[in-house]
Length: 423
Image (tube, rainbow, N blue to C red):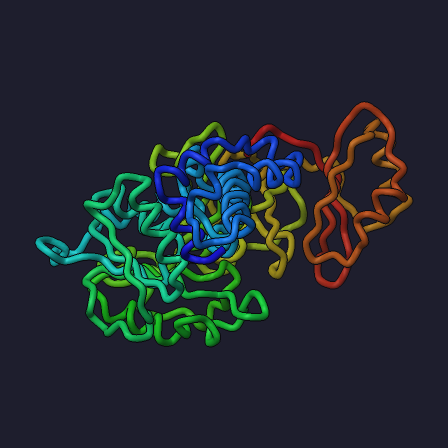
């Protein structure tokens, strides 16, 4: 999709054509839908200088992306605009809302008057829209002309032109201190796909970090797997998950940091169930305790705790275990165990029925003894092929169990567990 074809969709006639396409029918039979559009006189009238095939492709692409976008943006996707890469790389609305709400509560004093926040590598505008919805004046910058056009269309579609604008530009040309409040989501995709080396981001990680460190307040977004050793010592780092899926690392600088003497690291778990957003209370935090020391190590107790990926990636498993007077099974494995079950979005709790060195024969016998036909297999630190194990167990029966595979030292163990009803 090119800018002229996309621009045609923004006209009144273009919006009418988009609104006239049934997304369910388009997904079920895209060839039939495209064929119908090619003979629609309204499509040909969108831009007399463009081939009808290009206009049809633009319409079909937008209809498809809007449907896919509902997973990230909910009902708002139905009036937003996307590019394939822009949708894939955009921040989930729940996460953007959470960050924007936090940012709006900690705005630097210099954000009054004509000052605007800068959203570098703004993409289709997910974070920019969230900031503007919270009353934060913001200017987005992106190098791609089509992406800029899409972001502008989204600002208009969401009725946020009073607070947000976008310009085409090179983020590498942005100077330190140009914006009192800075948000930057470095591009992590190149010509060959995803980029995993932070030094190959655009802008490179050191450039993005320097800009963030030089602002009064800043948020720098990174992939959730970014190595801890490349994180700026000036930043408060937050690993964010949504419904058990790790989404990103957010680095907070200056006035957006966790405060003097605050934690260096935080795990945050957000939930979307029943449409509940973080700003409405569906959020749980776990903060670093610098003087905590290592968690104790002990054999399995009555309950096994499986921490959320945000807790694991932020290296805060010891802090989680401390909350329930728990202990690690092994100091290198992110499971912990306790004598009591405590409900929290930060972990899943299982009741331990059996704890033993791994033996297929013994495990199969135990599964049968518990009349289990549904077996959930989880593993951490285990080399066992879970699909082969599932077949070898030959489980049959009305009950459900969870088999957790792990190791203690160099020895493989299993825990046979059942759900407790604790999150």
